[in-house]
Length: 509
Image 1: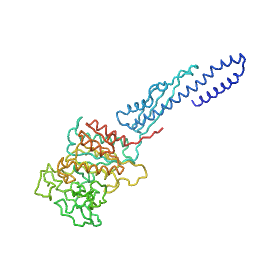
Image 2: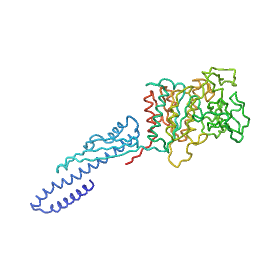
Image 3: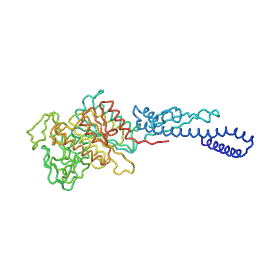
Image 4: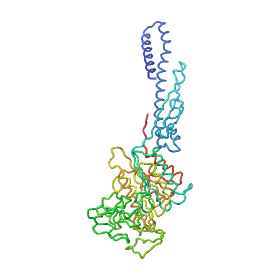
């Protein structure tokens, strides 16, 4: 079309120059010739006008397809994808634009290569070209959008408290719905690849506490090792575990179980199940607390170089008893096993890039139990996500763009229970909630200050107080960062949206 427009411009210019020369001739023949010449002259000028209109339509068509393709890419795996494409196209190419009649957009999707190709054409009516029998000009455009992952480390923090075994609106149990939705998120992020070099996913199941062992690796007391440390004062000395003698004061070693990189303040008992207490002392002095901090560098007021293992006092056998956390750990105060929540059987899956490994770990989430301590879940997800010890799988200083995110799912409010990570120092049941919520707010602020994106999903619980809290915790109070999923179908949709938001798109043509 560029060549046609240039030729038309030259013809129109020649006709105008001829008309000027003839205009000075006052003879009748010249006047007649000029009148006859005016007809094609107007036609040539009109052709330029019609051509310019066609170019405007083609340009608008191309930009509308680009916008529609990006919209389709963001919702690539959603059921609304094609509707989103058409909606964005229509919004950018309004009906009747310059009188054009549009055909399309036609949508072609390659799910293996995660590519969307869009084509459209428009018939542009002519005005002056009709003089030559041309009633319309057809223009066409095409765009291709490839869904492309940037480097991504993400940890799923899944609520495994007892309420997750309850029925979910829409059918099945809540934990089954969570498994299905989390699996679909993994499928979306990996696509058809079994491994991705620039994608790492970890999993932290949690309830009132977190099993900090490596998922699937059994504990062997005989394989516990020690590491020498500069002399420090153990903040838990004397030990809160009445079944284990207190360590020396000052202390010069920390202990490493065979199945976890998490350092411990004392050797774990033979029946240790894998859980640890929060690094928190209920002394009203914030400088002695490390529960909302990341690594093992101690805060100013206490030497929190490791974590205290929870022993029989908080991890009873099925037929055992445990003490409540009151006064001086008086063992004469016994409570039934139903009040003591065992450590989860599910350990931590550190960051890794094999699709089947994370799917297998998600599939194992089948036995919810215990109370809700959201701070524990999001805190250990943070420690798994960042390269600082104890979990060091993340790349410390990547020479490429890296996005880090935590996806937190919960169906309940914080609830203090015997055997939780805070030893019920904040109270029992809902009475401990205000201070537990404060700890959650503080750790969430620290996580976001580290540049981590926090996606938070409130599932099957419409509580307004919980919503207000979780909106504070999330990186933003609305989608795509905070979501409320009232039922299983919505939960699946939310996980798809989060997965798509974790992707980056580029125009490939």
